[in-house]
Length: 226
Image (tube, one colour):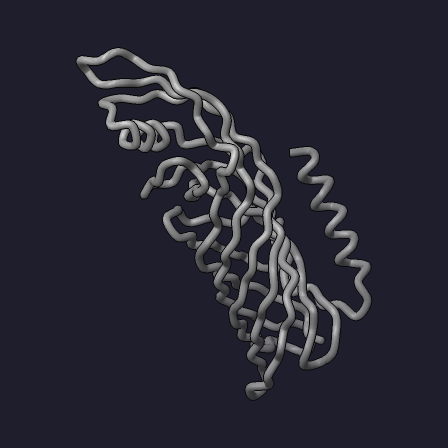
């Protein structure tokens, strides 16, 4: 957690130093496909920080999320249930923003990419055991496995509505679609078999495993007008 706080402090200093910037503090939630609602860790969510002109800007920021469970791919079997979780996730977007005035407010079209890193990521061993037993046709399976988290990337696009509250601040609401993954290699073994058969212990080939982040991000925030 100490390294995470140091990283967030560094990012915050960089964002504050950006020329011609505007700042936004938001509450963002991710509704992932085949996963569970991911909530922000307040106050570690600053979005809409950027620079540029009145109509075209480059925006960034960061959000620290709690991810209860997320799906995985790249394994020698498929699972309809989440295999990764829980974990903390740091998401850093970099997007182009095109603004169109609508009355006193504005509509923004957003598009770009994001960097994502997970901390203290764990495996859902219950779902992993069930997926392994189904793959092998066993009655029972028990895995002894370790997961290593690595940073990953993805793309995102969406829209945002900004409504001015006064001369200084505006209220914002955005919805974006995210699609990305992080390398999450798994190593270990699993043991199991049928009720009337012998127990077998086999290596678990998970070197190509990836944790998927695909779904909607909904953000509500307050930002400084520019």
